Image 1: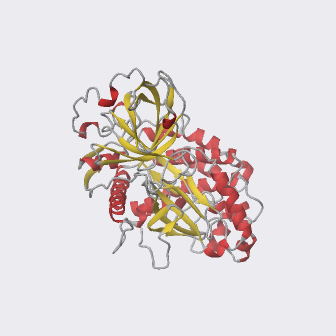
Image 2 (image 1 turned 135 degrees about the horizontal axis):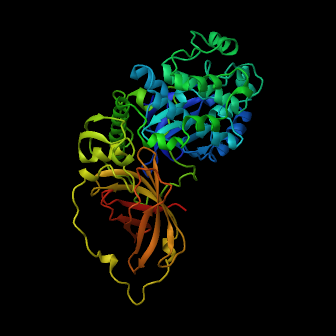
Length: 537
Protein backbone atom coordinates (compact mmCIF):
# COMPACT_ATOMS: atom_id res chain seq x y z
CA UNK A 1 0.00 0.00 0.00
CA UNK A 2 1.16 3.50 -0.80
CA UNK A 3 0.55 6.77 1.04
CA UNK A 4 -2.11 9.11 -0.26
CA UNK A 5 -0.80 11.88 -2.47
CA UNK A 6 -1.71 15.47 -1.71
CA UNK A 7 -4.29 15.55 -4.52
CA UNK A 8 -6.00 12.29 -3.52
CA UNK A 9 -9.20 12.07 -1.45
CA UNK A 10 -9.09 11.16 2.23
CA UNK A 11 -12.72 9.99 2.32
CA UNK A 12 -15.23 8.60 -0.16
CA UNK A 13 -18.86 8.27 0.86
CA UNK A 14 -18.88 6.81 4.39
CA UNK A 15 -15.36 5.37 4.06
CA UNK A 16 -12.16 6.90 5.42
CA UNK A 17 -9.25 6.15 3.08
CA UNK A 18 -6.04 4.84 4.64
CA UNK A 19 -3.85 4.49 1.57
CA UNK A 20 -3.72 3.61 -2.11
CA UNK A 21 -3.63 -0.08 -2.95
CA UNK A 22 -3.12 0.32 -6.67
CA UNK A 23 -4.42 1.71 -9.92
CA UNK A 24 -5.58 0.40 -13.27
CA UNK A 25 -7.00 1.52 -16.56
CA UNK A 26 -10.44 2.27 -15.14
CA UNK A 27 -9.61 3.81 -11.79
CA UNK A 28 -7.71 3.75 -8.52
CA UNK A 29 -8.24 1.45 -5.55
CA UNK A 30 -7.91 2.50 -1.92
CA UNK A 31 -8.00 0.76 1.43
CA UNK A 32 -10.89 2.20 3.42
CA UNK A 33 -12.69 1.72 6.71
CA UNK A 34 -16.21 2.62 7.72
CA UNK A 35 -17.23 4.07 11.06
CA UNK A 36 -17.98 0.56 12.31
CA UNK A 37 -14.42 -0.54 11.57
CA UNK A 38 -15.00 -2.75 8.53
CA UNK A 39 -12.13 -2.81 6.04
CA UNK A 40 -13.04 -2.41 2.38
CA UNK A 41 -11.44 -1.80 -0.98
CA UNK A 42 -12.85 1.36 -2.54
CA UNK A 43 -12.52 1.63 -6.32
CA UNK A 44 -12.84 5.15 -7.69
CA UNK A 45 -13.36 5.63 -11.43
CA UNK A 46 -10.94 7.93 -13.24
CA UNK A 47 -12.55 11.37 -13.43
CA UNK A 48 -12.60 11.56 -17.24
CA UNK A 49 -14.82 8.45 -17.35
CA UNK A 50 -17.24 10.21 -14.99
CA UNK A 51 -17.99 12.70 -17.78
CA UNK A 52 -19.32 9.92 -20.01
CA UNK A 53 -23.03 9.48 -19.36
CA UNK A 54 -23.10 6.16 -21.20
CA UNK A 55 -20.35 4.90 -18.93
CA UNK A 56 -22.31 6.01 -15.88
CA UNK A 57 -25.44 4.24 -17.09
CA UNK A 58 -23.60 0.96 -17.68
CA UNK A 59 -21.69 1.31 -14.44
CA UNK A 60 -24.98 1.74 -12.59
CA UNK A 61 -26.53 -1.35 -14.21
CA UNK A 62 -23.50 -3.55 -13.71
CA UNK A 63 -22.99 -2.60 -10.06
CA UNK A 64 -26.63 -3.49 -9.46
CA UNK A 65 -26.08 -6.82 -11.21
CA UNK A 66 -22.88 -7.50 -9.27
CA UNK A 67 -24.80 -7.30 -6.00
CA UNK A 68 -26.75 -10.36 -7.11
CA UNK A 69 -23.68 -12.54 -7.49
CA UNK A 70 -23.56 -14.79 -4.46
CA UNK A 71 -21.09 -17.50 -5.40
CA UNK A 72 -18.73 -18.73 -2.70
CA UNK A 73 -15.64 -17.78 -4.71
CA UNK A 74 -16.44 -14.18 -5.61
CA UNK A 75 -15.87 -11.05 -3.55
CA UNK A 76 -19.00 -9.15 -2.49
CA UNK A 77 -19.90 -5.64 -3.53
CA UNK A 78 -20.84 -3.85 -0.31
CA UNK A 79 -21.64 -0.31 -1.38
CA UNK A 80 -21.51 1.97 -4.42
CA UNK A 81 -22.48 5.42 -5.68
CA UNK A 82 -22.65 5.47 -9.48
CA UNK A 83 -24.28 8.93 -9.32
CA UNK A 84 -21.47 10.59 -7.36
CA UNK A 85 -19.41 13.29 -9.05
CA UNK A 86 -16.79 10.57 -9.47
CA UNK A 87 -18.46 7.10 -9.32
CA UNK A 88 -17.11 4.56 -6.85
CA UNK A 89 -17.77 1.04 -5.60
CA UNK A 90 -16.71 -0.60 -2.33
CA UNK A 91 -15.99 -4.30 -2.16
CA UNK A 92 -14.93 -6.60 0.62
CA UNK A 93 -11.18 -6.65 1.25
CA UNK A 94 -9.42 -10.02 1.16
CA UNK A 95 -6.15 -10.79 2.93
CA UNK A 96 -4.20 -12.63 0.28
CA UNK A 97 -1.99 -12.06 -2.75
CA UNK A 98 -3.07 -12.02 -6.34
CA UNK A 99 -2.11 -15.04 -8.40
CA UNK A 100 0.36 -12.78 -10.19
CA UNK A 101 2.09 -11.89 -6.93
CA UNK A 102 2.04 -15.50 -5.69
CA UNK A 103 3.81 -16.72 -8.83
CA UNK A 104 6.28 -13.88 -9.32
CA UNK A 105 7.18 -13.46 -5.65
CA UNK A 106 6.97 -17.13 -4.77
CA UNK A 107 9.43 -18.40 -7.34
CA UNK A 108 7.23 -19.81 -10.07
CA UNK A 109 4.57 -22.46 -10.54
CA UNK A 110 2.12 -23.64 -7.89
CA UNK A 111 1.58 -27.29 -6.84
CA UNK A 112 -0.84 -29.37 -8.88
CA UNK A 113 -3.30 -29.64 -5.97
CA UNK A 114 -3.34 -25.85 -5.61
CA UNK A 115 -3.97 -25.39 -9.33
CA UNK A 116 -6.74 -27.99 -9.29
CA UNK A 117 -8.46 -26.24 -6.36
CA UNK A 118 -7.97 -22.88 -8.03
CA UNK A 119 -9.66 -24.08 -11.21
CA UNK A 120 -12.53 -25.73 -9.36
CA UNK A 121 -13.26 -22.63 -7.29
CA UNK A 122 -13.07 -20.24 -10.23
CA UNK A 123 -15.17 -22.61 -12.34
CA UNK A 124 -17.90 -22.57 -9.70
CA UNK A 125 -17.63 -18.79 -9.47
CA UNK A 126 -18.03 -18.33 -13.23
CA UNK A 127 -20.93 -20.77 -13.30
CA UNK A 128 -22.76 -18.60 -10.77
CA UNK A 129 -21.92 -15.42 -12.69
CA UNK A 130 -23.04 -16.82 -16.05
CA UNK A 131 -26.28 -18.12 -14.52
CA UNK A 132 -27.20 -14.47 -13.96
CA UNK A 133 -26.59 -13.61 -17.61
CA UNK A 134 -23.32 -11.84 -16.81
CA UNK A 135 -19.85 -12.24 -18.28
CA UNK A 136 -16.74 -11.23 -16.35
CA UNK A 137 -14.67 -10.37 -19.46
CA UNK A 138 -11.38 -9.87 -17.61
CA UNK A 139 -10.37 -13.12 -15.92
CA UNK A 140 -6.61 -12.88 -15.46
CA UNK A 141 -4.02 -13.67 -12.74
CA UNK A 142 -4.18 -10.22 -11.18
CA UNK A 143 -7.96 -10.56 -10.77
CA UNK A 144 -7.63 -13.78 -8.78
CA UNK A 145 -6.85 -13.64 -5.06
CA UNK A 146 -5.45 -16.54 -3.07
CA UNK A 147 -6.85 -16.50 0.46
CA UNK A 148 -6.73 -19.07 3.22
CA UNK A 149 -10.40 -19.76 2.58
CA UNK A 150 -9.93 -20.41 -1.12
CA UNK A 151 -9.56 -18.50 -4.40
CA UNK A 152 -11.55 -15.34 -5.08
CA UNK A 153 -12.51 -13.92 -8.47
CA UNK A 154 -12.66 -10.14 -8.23
CA UNK A 155 -13.13 -6.96 -10.27
CA UNK A 156 -16.80 -7.21 -11.10
CA UNK A 157 -18.52 -4.00 -12.14
CA UNK A 158 -15.85 -1.76 -13.62
CA UNK A 159 -14.58 -4.20 -16.26
CA UNK A 160 -18.08 -4.98 -17.49
CA UNK A 161 -19.27 -1.41 -17.22
CA UNK A 162 -16.72 -0.30 -19.79
CA UNK A 163 -17.76 -2.83 -22.43
CA UNK A 164 -19.45 -1.16 -25.34
CA UNK A 165 -18.85 2.40 -24.17
CA UNK A 166 -18.06 4.37 -27.31
CA UNK A 167 -15.70 6.86 -25.73
CA UNK A 168 -13.51 4.11 -24.34
CA UNK A 169 -13.20 2.49 -27.73
CA UNK A 170 -12.34 5.78 -29.37
CA UNK A 171 -9.56 6.47 -26.91
CA UNK A 172 -8.04 3.05 -27.49
CA UNK A 173 -8.71 1.50 -24.10
CA UNK A 174 -9.00 -2.25 -24.63
CA UNK A 175 -11.54 -4.29 -22.73
CA UNK A 176 -9.65 -7.26 -21.37
CA UNK A 177 -5.99 -8.16 -20.98
CA UNK A 178 -3.73 -9.23 -23.87
CA UNK A 179 -2.65 -12.84 -23.48
CA UNK A 180 -5.78 -13.74 -21.52
CA UNK A 181 -8.52 -12.50 -23.85
CA UNK A 182 -10.36 -15.05 -25.96
CA UNK A 183 -9.86 -14.93 -29.75
CA UNK A 184 -13.47 -13.90 -30.37
CA UNK A 185 -13.05 -11.13 -27.82
CA UNK A 186 -9.99 -9.81 -29.63
CA UNK A 187 -11.69 -9.99 -33.02
CA UNK A 188 -14.82 -8.23 -31.77
CA UNK A 189 -17.11 -11.14 -32.62
CA UNK A 190 -19.10 -10.92 -29.40
CA UNK A 191 -18.35 -12.14 -25.92
CA UNK A 192 -20.18 -14.99 -24.18
CA UNK A 193 -19.39 -17.04 -21.11
CA UNK A 194 -17.09 -19.18 -23.26
CA UNK A 195 -14.68 -16.25 -23.39
CA UNK A 196 -14.32 -16.40 -19.60
CA UNK A 197 -13.53 -20.12 -19.87
CA UNK A 198 -10.72 -19.38 -22.34
CA UNK A 199 -9.33 -16.79 -19.94
CA UNK A 200 -9.58 -19.26 -17.06
CA UNK A 201 -7.64 -21.83 -19.06
CA UNK A 202 -4.86 -19.28 -19.58
CA UNK A 203 -4.91 -18.49 -15.85
CA UNK A 204 -4.57 -22.17 -14.93
CA UNK A 205 -1.71 -22.62 -17.38
CA UNK A 206 0.04 -19.64 -15.81
CA UNK A 207 -0.47 -21.02 -12.29
CA UNK A 208 0.73 -24.50 -13.26
CA UNK A 209 3.85 -23.42 -15.16
CA UNK A 210 4.76 -19.98 -13.87
CA UNK A 211 4.61 -18.53 -17.39
CA UNK A 212 1.72 -17.39 -19.62
CA UNK A 213 0.57 -19.83 -22.32
CA UNK A 214 0.99 -17.06 -24.90
CA UNK A 215 4.31 -15.36 -24.11
CA UNK A 216 5.22 -12.10 -25.79
CA UNK A 217 6.86 -8.73 -25.29
CA UNK A 218 4.11 -6.50 -26.65
CA UNK A 219 0.34 -6.31 -26.67
CA UNK A 220 0.27 -6.67 -30.44
CA UNK A 221 2.34 -9.87 -30.31
CA UNK A 222 0.20 -11.33 -27.57
CA UNK A 223 -3.03 -10.61 -29.41
CA UNK A 224 -1.69 -12.17 -32.60
CA UNK A 225 -0.56 -15.33 -30.80
CA UNK A 226 -3.89 -15.80 -29.05
CA UNK A 227 -5.74 -15.63 -32.38
CA UNK A 228 -3.32 -17.55 -34.62
CA UNK A 229 -1.01 -19.75 -32.51
CA UNK A 230 -1.44 -22.67 -30.14
CA UNK A 231 -0.71 -22.19 -26.43
CA UNK A 232 2.46 -23.50 -24.84
CA UNK A 233 1.32 -26.19 -22.44
CA UNK A 234 4.29 -28.57 -22.35
CA UNK A 235 4.99 -27.87 -18.67
CA UNK A 236 1.38 -28.28 -17.53
CA UNK A 237 1.03 -31.43 -15.36
CA UNK A 238 -0.35 -34.40 -17.30
CA UNK A 239 -3.40 -34.68 -15.05
CA UNK A 240 -4.44 -31.13 -15.98
CA UNK A 241 -3.11 -30.84 -19.53
CA UNK A 242 -6.12 -31.99 -21.54
CA UNK A 243 -8.60 -29.94 -19.55
CA UNK A 244 -6.52 -26.75 -19.80
CA UNK A 245 -6.07 -27.36 -23.53
CA UNK A 246 -9.84 -27.75 -23.94
CA UNK A 247 -10.41 -24.41 -22.23
CA UNK A 248 -7.99 -22.78 -24.68
CA UNK A 249 -9.69 -24.09 -27.82
CA UNK A 250 -10.00 -21.39 -30.49
CA UNK A 251 -13.61 -22.42 -31.17
CA UNK A 252 -15.83 -21.31 -28.26
CA UNK A 253 -18.18 -24.26 -28.85
CA UNK A 254 -15.39 -26.75 -28.06
CA UNK A 255 -14.66 -25.34 -24.62
CA UNK A 256 -16.19 -26.89 -21.49
CA UNK A 257 -18.68 -24.90 -19.48
CA UNK A 258 -17.51 -23.55 -16.10
CA UNK A 259 -19.68 -26.12 -14.32
CA UNK A 260 -18.17 -28.98 -16.35
CA UNK A 261 -14.69 -27.69 -15.63
CA UNK A 262 -15.35 -27.48 -11.89
CA UNK A 263 -16.91 -30.96 -11.80
CA UNK A 264 -13.93 -32.54 -13.56
CA UNK A 265 -11.45 -30.87 -11.24
CA UNK A 266 -13.41 -31.43 -8.01
CA UNK A 267 -16.28 -33.93 -8.25
CA UNK A 268 -17.15 -33.29 -4.59
CA UNK A 269 -16.89 -29.52 -4.89
CA UNK A 270 -14.10 -26.99 -4.49
CA UNK A 271 -14.91 -26.46 -0.82
CA UNK A 272 -13.79 -30.00 0.00
CA UNK A 273 -10.41 -29.40 -1.66
CA UNK A 274 -9.98 -26.13 0.21
CA UNK A 275 -10.91 -27.80 3.49
CA UNK A 276 -8.06 -30.24 3.04
CA UNK A 277 -5.50 -27.44 2.82
CA UNK A 278 -4.94 -25.95 -0.61
CA UNK A 279 -2.05 -23.48 -0.40
CA UNK A 280 1.63 -24.43 -0.10
CA UNK A 281 3.11 -23.76 3.34
CA UNK A 282 5.33 -20.86 2.29
CA UNK A 283 2.34 -19.05 0.81
CA UNK A 284 0.23 -19.65 3.92
CA UNK A 285 2.95 -18.01 6.00
CA UNK A 286 3.20 -14.97 3.73
CA UNK A 287 -0.57 -14.50 3.69
CA UNK A 288 -0.63 -14.70 7.48
CA UNK A 289 2.14 -12.16 7.88
CA UNK A 290 0.36 -9.79 5.53
CA UNK A 291 -2.81 -10.13 7.58
CA UNK A 292 -0.94 -9.23 10.75
CA UNK A 293 0.52 -6.11 9.09
CA UNK A 294 -2.97 -5.10 7.99
CA UNK A 295 -4.31 -5.58 11.51
CA UNK A 296 -1.52 -3.36 12.87
CA UNK A 297 -2.42 -0.71 10.33
CA UNK A 298 -6.09 -0.86 11.34
CA UNK A 299 -5.13 -0.47 14.98
CA UNK A 300 -3.11 2.65 14.21
CA UNK A 301 -5.96 4.04 12.13
CA UNK A 302 -8.53 3.45 14.85
CA UNK A 303 -6.34 5.18 17.41
CA UNK A 304 -5.12 8.17 15.45
CA UNK A 305 -7.23 8.65 12.33
CA UNK A 306 -5.65 8.55 8.85
CA UNK A 307 -2.24 6.93 8.95
CA UNK A 308 0.76 9.16 8.31
CA UNK A 309 2.98 7.11 6.02
CA UNK A 310 6.73 7.48 5.83
CA UNK A 311 7.00 4.26 3.80
CA UNK A 312 4.60 1.58 2.51
CA UNK A 313 2.93 -0.01 5.52
CA UNK A 314 1.99 -3.23 3.76
CA UNK A 315 4.01 -4.95 1.07
CA UNK A 316 2.39 -4.06 -2.23
CA UNK A 317 2.64 -7.58 -3.58
CA UNK A 318 0.55 -8.92 -0.71
CA UNK A 319 -2.05 -6.20 -0.33
CA UNK A 320 -3.09 -5.57 -3.92
CA UNK A 321 -4.17 -7.67 -6.83
CA UNK A 322 -1.27 -6.60 -9.00
CA UNK A 323 -3.47 -4.35 -11.09
CA UNK A 324 -4.94 -2.29 -8.33
CA UNK A 325 -7.95 -4.45 -7.78
CA UNK A 326 -8.09 -5.71 -4.22
CA UNK A 327 -11.03 -6.82 -2.24
CA UNK A 328 -11.77 -8.36 1.10
CA UNK A 329 -13.92 -11.48 1.58
CA UNK A 330 -15.62 -14.70 0.84
CA UNK A 331 -19.18 -14.03 1.56
CA UNK A 332 -22.54 -13.31 0.12
CA UNK A 333 -23.94 -10.11 -1.27
CA UNK A 334 -26.10 -8.02 0.97
CA UNK A 335 -27.40 -4.51 1.43
CA UNK A 336 -25.00 -1.61 1.62
CA UNK A 337 -23.98 -0.97 5.22
CA UNK A 338 -25.74 1.86 7.07
CA UNK A 339 -23.35 3.97 9.07
CA UNK A 340 -24.01 4.67 12.77
CA UNK A 341 -24.48 8.25 13.85
CA UNK A 342 -21.81 9.98 15.97
CA UNK A 343 -23.99 9.44 19.05
CA UNK A 344 -23.84 5.70 18.64
CA UNK A 345 -20.64 4.35 20.24
CA UNK A 346 -19.78 1.70 17.68
CA UNK A 347 -16.02 1.97 17.34
CA UNK A 348 -13.57 -0.81 16.81
CA UNK A 349 -11.14 -1.50 19.65
CA UNK A 350 -7.56 -0.44 19.21
CA UNK A 351 -5.41 -3.56 19.03
CA UNK A 352 -1.83 -3.35 20.10
CA UNK A 353 1.11 -3.98 17.82
CA UNK A 354 1.36 -7.60 16.76
CA UNK A 355 4.32 -9.80 16.05
CA UNK A 356 4.57 -13.33 14.76
CA UNK A 357 7.07 -16.13 14.48
CA UNK A 358 5.63 -19.11 12.68
CA UNK A 359 6.17 -22.09 10.45
CA UNK A 360 3.17 -22.80 8.24
CA UNK A 361 1.99 -25.87 6.45
CA UNK A 362 -0.93 -26.62 4.21
CA UNK A 363 -1.19 -30.25 5.27
CA UNK A 364 -4.66 -31.22 6.49
CA UNK A 365 -5.11 -31.06 10.24
CA UNK A 366 -6.32 -33.93 12.38
CA UNK A 367 -9.94 -34.77 11.94
CA UNK A 368 -10.16 -33.37 8.43
CA UNK A 369 -10.43 -29.76 9.53
CA UNK A 370 -9.23 -26.88 7.38
CA UNK A 371 -5.56 -27.00 6.48
CA UNK A 372 -4.80 -23.73 8.20
CA UNK A 373 -3.41 -24.82 11.53
CA UNK A 374 -0.06 -23.16 12.07
CA UNK A 375 2.89 -24.11 14.22
CA UNK A 376 3.18 -20.78 15.97
CA UNK A 377 4.96 -18.85 18.65
CA UNK A 378 2.58 -15.96 18.83
CA UNK A 379 1.05 -13.37 21.06
CA UNK A 380 -2.52 -14.27 21.96
CA UNK A 381 -4.04 -11.58 19.74
CA UNK A 382 -1.96 -12.76 16.80
CA UNK A 383 -3.39 -16.25 17.15
CA UNK A 384 -6.80 -14.83 16.43
CA UNK A 385 -5.56 -12.73 13.54
CA UNK A 386 -3.89 -15.64 11.79
CA UNK A 387 -6.69 -18.10 12.41
CA UNK A 388 -9.45 -15.85 11.08
CA UNK A 389 -11.39 -16.28 14.31
CA UNK A 390 -15.11 -16.71 13.83
CA UNK A 391 -18.08 -17.00 16.14
CA UNK A 392 -17.40 -20.71 16.59
CA UNK A 393 -13.71 -20.82 15.74
CA UNK A 394 -11.68 -23.84 16.77
CA UNK A 395 -8.14 -22.63 16.03
CA UNK A 396 -7.35 -20.69 19.19
CA UNK A 397 -8.65 -23.28 21.61
CA UNK A 398 -5.32 -24.19 23.13
CA UNK A 399 -4.13 -20.59 23.31
CA UNK A 400 -7.09 -19.00 25.07
CA UNK A 401 -6.77 -18.42 28.82
CA UNK A 402 -9.25 -20.20 31.03
CA UNK A 403 -12.40 -18.42 31.99
CA UNK A 404 -14.23 -19.41 35.15
CA UNK A 405 -17.89 -20.22 35.01
CA UNK A 406 -19.75 -16.96 35.43
CA UNK A 407 -22.76 -18.72 36.83
CA UNK A 408 -26.04 -16.86 36.68
CA UNK A 409 -25.43 -13.38 35.36
CA UNK A 410 -27.50 -10.59 36.80
CA UNK A 411 -29.58 -10.46 33.67
CA UNK A 412 -30.09 -14.23 33.57
CA UNK A 413 -32.19 -14.52 36.67
CA UNK A 414 -35.73 -15.78 36.50
CA UNK A 415 -38.16 -13.37 34.90
CA UNK A 416 -40.33 -11.26 37.11
CA UNK A 417 -44.06 -11.58 37.16
CA UNK A 418 -44.29 -8.69 34.72
CA UNK A 419 -41.55 -9.89 32.37
CA UNK A 420 -42.64 -10.13 28.72
CA UNK A 421 -43.16 -13.51 27.09
CA UNK A 422 -42.46 -12.24 23.56
CA UNK A 423 -39.67 -10.01 22.33
CA UNK A 424 -40.26 -6.33 23.03
CA UNK A 425 -40.26 -4.09 19.96
CA UNK A 426 -37.00 -2.45 21.04
CA UNK A 427 -35.11 -5.61 20.02
CA UNK A 428 -36.56 -5.90 16.52
CA UNK A 429 -34.57 -4.90 13.44
CA UNK A 430 -31.06 -5.29 12.07
CA UNK A 431 -28.04 -4.50 14.23
CA UNK A 432 -24.36 -4.26 13.34
CA UNK A 433 -21.08 -3.59 15.13
CA UNK A 434 -17.49 -4.62 15.71
CA UNK A 435 -16.80 -7.64 17.90
CA UNK A 436 -13.91 -8.53 20.18
CA UNK A 437 -12.89 -11.53 22.26
CA UNK A 438 -10.48 -12.40 25.07
CA UNK A 439 -11.58 -9.47 27.23
CA UNK A 440 -11.44 -7.00 24.36
CA UNK A 441 -7.90 -7.89 23.26
CA UNK A 442 -8.77 -9.78 20.08
CA UNK A 443 -10.60 -8.04 17.18
CA UNK A 444 -13.00 -10.49 15.53
CA UNK A 445 -14.57 -8.46 12.73
CA UNK A 446 -18.18 -7.47 12.13
CA UNK A 447 -21.32 -8.92 13.73
CA UNK A 448 -24.63 -8.34 11.94
CA UNK A 449 -27.77 -9.54 13.73
CA UNK A 450 -31.30 -9.52 12.32
CA UNK A 451 -33.98 -9.90 14.99
CA UNK A 452 -37.58 -10.81 14.18
CA UNK A 453 -40.68 -11.34 16.30
CA UNK A 454 -40.34 -14.38 18.53
CA UNK A 455 -41.47 -15.90 21.79
CA UNK A 456 -39.67 -18.26 24.16
CA UNK A 457 -38.64 -21.41 22.28
CA UNK A 458 -38.84 -19.71 18.88
CA UNK A 459 -36.11 -18.61 16.50
CA UNK A 460 -35.10 -15.02 17.19
CA UNK A 461 -32.94 -14.49 14.11
CA UNK A 462 -29.54 -15.05 12.55
CA UNK A 463 -26.16 -13.58 13.43
CA UNK A 464 -23.68 -13.23 10.59
CA UNK A 465 -20.05 -12.89 11.62
CA UNK A 466 -17.70 -11.51 8.96
CA UNK A 467 -14.15 -12.02 10.21
CA UNK A 468 -11.16 -9.76 9.56
CA UNK A 469 -10.32 -11.79 6.46
CA UNK A 470 -13.82 -11.57 5.01
CA UNK A 471 -14.91 -15.13 5.86
CA UNK A 472 -18.42 -15.59 7.21
CA UNK A 473 -20.16 -17.80 9.75
CA UNK A 474 -23.87 -17.81 10.57
CA UNK A 475 -25.43 -18.63 13.94
CA UNK A 476 -29.14 -19.18 14.54
CA UNK A 477 -30.37 -17.72 17.83
CA UNK A 478 -33.34 -19.27 19.67
CA UNK A 479 -35.06 -17.49 22.57
CA UNK A 480 -34.61 -19.28 25.89
CA UNK A 481 -35.59 -16.58 28.39
CA UNK A 482 -36.87 -13.03 28.34
CA UNK A 483 -36.28 -10.89 31.42
CA UNK A 484 -36.83 -7.26 32.21
CA UNK A 485 -33.17 -6.54 31.51
CA UNK A 486 -32.21 -8.77 28.56
CA UNK A 487 -33.00 -11.64 26.23
CA UNK A 488 -31.17 -14.94 26.74
CA UNK A 489 -30.76 -17.10 23.64
CA UNK A 490 -29.15 -20.34 22.56
CA UNK A 491 -26.93 -20.01 19.49
CA UNK A 492 -25.84 -22.77 17.10
CA UNK A 493 -24.00 -22.68 13.80
CA UNK A 494 -25.99 -23.44 10.67
CA UNK A 495 -25.20 -26.72 8.82
CA UNK A 496 -23.91 -24.90 5.73
CA UNK A 497 -21.18 -23.01 7.59
CA UNK A 498 -17.52 -23.29 6.61
CA UNK A 499 -15.54 -25.93 8.42
CA UNK A 500 -13.81 -23.27 10.54
CA UNK A 501 -17.20 -22.55 12.13
CA UNK A 502 -18.13 -24.96 14.90
CA UNK A 503 -21.68 -26.13 15.50
CA UNK A 504 -21.26 -26.13 19.28
CA UNK A 505 -24.20 -24.59 21.09
CA UNK A 506 -23.57 -21.61 23.38
CA UNK A 507 -25.51 -18.95 25.24
CA UNK A 508 -25.85 -15.42 23.90
CA UNK A 509 -27.29 -12.57 25.94
CA UNK A 510 -28.71 -9.45 24.28
CA UNK A 511 -28.93 -6.42 26.55
CA UNK A 512 -30.23 -2.97 25.54
CA UNK A 513 -27.70 -0.22 26.29
CA UNK A 514 -29.11 3.15 25.37
CA UNK A 515 -29.99 2.98 21.69
CA UNK A 516 -27.63 0.05 21.15
CA UNK A 517 -27.70 -3.67 21.84
CA UNK A 518 -24.94 -5.39 23.79
CA UNK A 519 -24.06 -8.90 22.55
CA UNK A 520 -22.35 -11.28 25.01
CA UNK A 521 -21.51 -14.91 24.27
CA UNK A 522 -20.24 -17.55 26.70
CA UNK A 523 -18.46 -19.52 23.94
CA UNK A 524 -15.11 -20.52 25.38
CA UNK A 525 -13.94 -21.71 21.96
CA UNK A 526 -14.20 -18.18 20.60
CA UNK A 527 -12.89 -16.32 23.63
CA UNK A 528 -16.31 -15.15 24.88
CA UNK A 529 -17.09 -12.66 22.07
CA UNK A 530 -18.67 -9.31 22.82
CA UNK A 531 -20.04 -6.64 20.53
CA UNK A 532 -21.81 -3.29 20.82
CA UNK A 533 -24.40 -3.38 18.04
CA UNK A 534 -26.11 -0.33 16.58
CA UNK A 535 -29.41 -0.43 14.75
CA UNK A 536 -28.93 -0.23 10.98
CA UNK A 537 -32.35 -1.26 9.77
